[in-house]
Length: 88
Image (cartoon, rainbow, N blue to C red; front, side, top):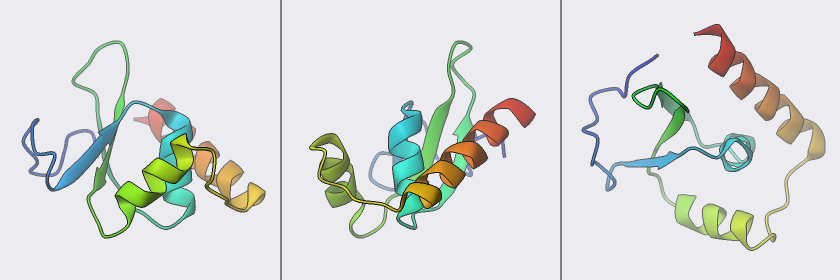
């Protein structure tokens, strides 16, 4: 999955975009699905998540350092995302 699945580059109502690996791992850890990786920027990859109920609250909790996830789950999510980054 190298391109956004039918998403326009400005479709922020249906999708959430981030370049942040830590935030992406946190989102995966709490159950949000990664839709795709956007490699449109040659210098860095953007993670694309489908907007779902609760995603904004999780993002806010992550940046406020209030989000709690299981350490092993977070580590596994980080490892999976890195594998996706370097294998595609």
